[in-house]
Length: 194
Image 1 (tube, rainbow, N blue to C red):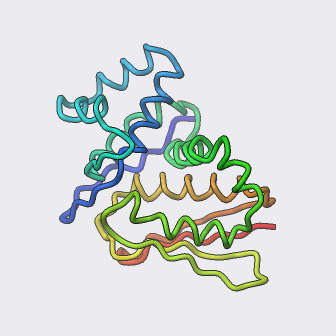
Image 2: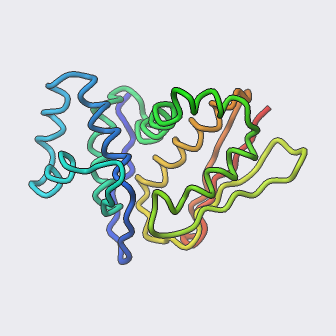
């Protein structure tokens, strides 16, 4: 089954994100083979190609460009996965949280990880806020991206996959994360786990 793409949407307010997503795309495409990366590069405009080749994890990239590159790369990386954008985020979380981080994440609770993800939002995004909400003793919570109505759908789905991958790394069982994107001022991710 082919990837269901989250068709890129134009926006009025363009935020920026760190180039970590693009650096991950480069790493992942190159790990497949040179034909996969060449296929991807063949889909890019001259400006997108320059950003793909030069973006660094600490540099800022327009979020719309990052979303566009993810939208083009995901079906190449996961050609048989209908949720390829979500899976791209999930795999990036596993990659980002490997090594020493993997050990640390394994020993913290999901609410603690949600709080940490929330506190790191502005390290990777120059627009919007991420709020973590949960009740002590409950095995559910929410991550809410606020005040970022122009966040592209592709980015929202990739972020959902990232959150899911990160939460799964805690060792919790049956982690589920569903979204509600109906309010453009509060994109919500409802999580539950055992």
